[in-house]
Image 1 (cartoon, rainbow, N blue to C red):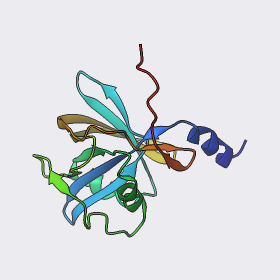
Image 2: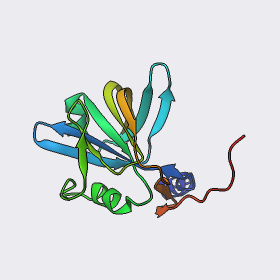
Image 3: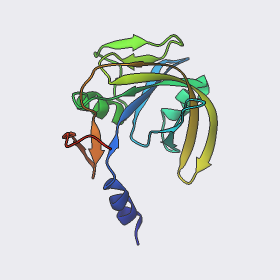
Image 4: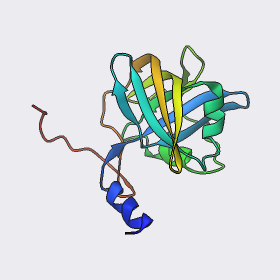
Length: 161
């Protein structure tokens, strides 16, 4: 029972990938997140986890709000850029702004503009719960998937019943 073994088991769970972005005092900041989930429809709540070691999350948290861009399978490179330390994450690309001023990738599957409701320490991460104040659908294509430490595509099989 090792930490690496635990991580490997959890890596078998395929997840979508999002960007969490905000307009901070020092300009736009953002990070890639795969621990994103919906929580509630009424009120519209989402959650994600941010590592305590993140150098980006404190700047996002300080704004009190952020945007989430749901990434498409064509956005692997932007995801890699947002996962790298010391990268110029907003160079190039096509960016839009939410009504609150947060940047969102224009070619994402959709976006949410959120206000932080609560942050709770959970082991080596912080669990963030936020309320979506605004949202929009984007491109109609397949999502970017992360599985077993790699990016993967989604193959449609059948509709859920």
